[in-house]
Amino acid sequence: MASSPISLVFKVHRREPELIKPAKPTPHELKPLSDIDDQEGLRFQVPILQFYRHSPSMQGKDPVEVIREALAETLVFYYPFAGRLREGHNRKLMVECTGEGILFIEADADVTLEQFGDPLQPPFPCFEELLFDVPGSAGVLNCPLLLIQVTRLKCDGFLFGLRLNHTMSDGSGLAQFLTAVGEMARGATAPLRPSCVGEVCSECKKPTTGYLHTP
Image (cartoon, rainbow, N blue to C red; front, side):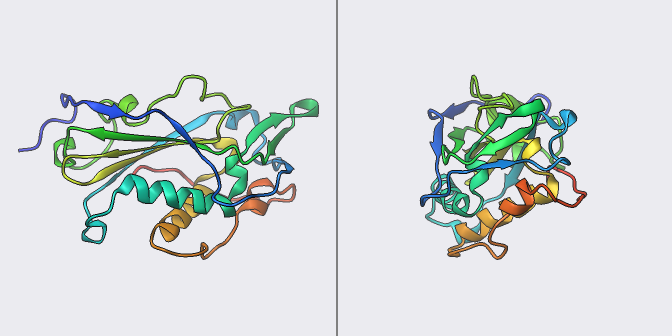
């Protein structure tokens, strides 16, 4: 019988956080956010946690390494995410495409996916261990725009934790980015939709609707 997720206790061993930069040089430029995204009410971080069972296609592969490499390749096409937000005249938000990279954490947990119970839904035990708040990283300005933690489980599955600066993307934009990461992880040389640069940072961006969810 699976443990009650509310009472579940486990240990997580994390490596030191690192910055993942685009795998190739990217433009260094300043892009103003659209008026839709540049709203006071969007200046916060959105956490997401996704669970993945072991897949036969991943036999002999380390999900941490696969995702780390795929992120670097994807950031070549989504390079604004590797930059930093700056504040200009009248508090106008702009992303400086510096190529500094996104925060990445490699971790291991002595727990299986089954122990989290079914269905998988919040609140998750030890959430702060599965998506560690790196000190000094949670600000809106001058901080990494994405934080990702990949935690290996005892059952060979893994957890994918992500924290997003909400001014940079809505749910559909994030889904597009994660789809691109999956494509690159499977060996693609470029995402099917190769760039969100114009959508993320265009002054004439049209309104879009979307939502963030935890599978």
